[in-house]
Image (cartoon, rainbow, N blue to C red):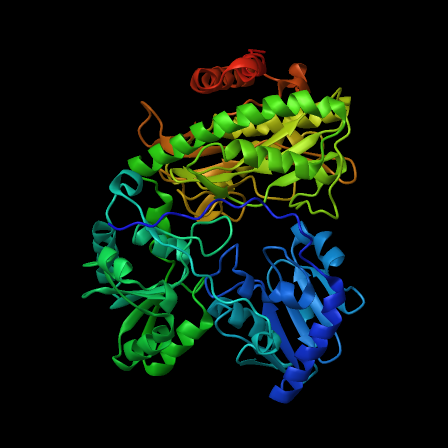
Length: 605
């Protein structure tokens, strides 16, 4: 198939994206638009129509109005007051980025009843149905019940955003069989079998990761993730349809999709939904990810809806042999870059001249020595000393902090290689650690090892094994307020469903799943600790009906912070075997000072 070269990788930006001084004039403009539209309040979610963790600049409506740039949140702008709802990750970031004189920040998971504070009794709250799922709309309507009406409306933020960036136009690449492992025709055949079993006449796909995986294509429409943004309709019989920005539709693209899908303009998507409805078709949609506008258009035109989880999510999460081989290659390449970086870091940190930004740019430079590294998989979390306690800290020119010798350094980073996606966290010593720091570090490590060594029966979920990582912290009355692990895509999103390790993950593990394993501990204002490897689920050798994990990440874990008296023999053996593997796989690929450093860093305890 035809393929297109990706543009050069981008360095992470450290510009302060939020400008609280712009909140007031933008709220004023939005309220004027609300008044002209005859509505009392307007909802502004972080999400776009594709529900991505990253959104193109022109879809960042929440950041445009409130200044808040986090990956999850919701604002309600009323006639005379506004509220911003964020989860516990952003309770520090949100007040710092918005104008708190005009916007009240609430910590909330999901839709909070407090939205009624911003809508008058008997008033109307308007929302853009392309930016909310049917489930979200039902939840909001329930919170407003007896208080106000919820009404769909054209997006009022777009109406006032006069310099709104245009839709992203980036090249599209098609993966060869050596990288995808399965051709798109076979994937489509499997999907049509699912439709026949439901039964459903057609499937509507709105998640870019599902569409990209299904058609073995990748793009650069959003930062950090090789997505092509668009929509797809897959009928039980006949050709699939892809709906993309017209600027992306080329003869080469049509040729690459010959026999798989017809390509049409994204403007034709809504009319196609209407035609399905008028034909009385049964259409499968995922109510947790499809825009409410999709459901409303189909239902309003006469379609019957089959509301089920996106049927691509499961097969996509079960990496095949080629995808797993690519992930292993990506982690080998990443391990080489990390060995070089960590050697450099150990030499430079004691000098007291490193900054958080300097650390990020150095790591990116080492990764970019490998030409197949096309981007970071997310903005690196580079937390020196007390900033390490901010779980989703993003360093900017304004917040950049010097790393003082003796402080802990938390570095959570990842890369997108053409072969796969990586995500790793290491906490590094820069001098003597306190007894408390050594205790907490060791308990975090013990939790990470417990997950790594786990064996469990088929049918086990991440919700069930999450406690294995927390147990050692619980013993001393502490914990961490984030999940232990998330799913990871194969040269796709660094965060993907439907499996992970946290109480919310109730889908059983299957061979081929790749998840992160990242327990932590955070002492506000002082330090943070997190240790993360990626692990793949596999059938347990010689134990039918059981699963265990293969560790993918290949980088030393700082043993200088370990309190050896807390480690069991089995834990020490696991760590020694892991370090021996890192040495055997990375050692032959580095030279000189890096090789000498790696030999010492992987020495047995």
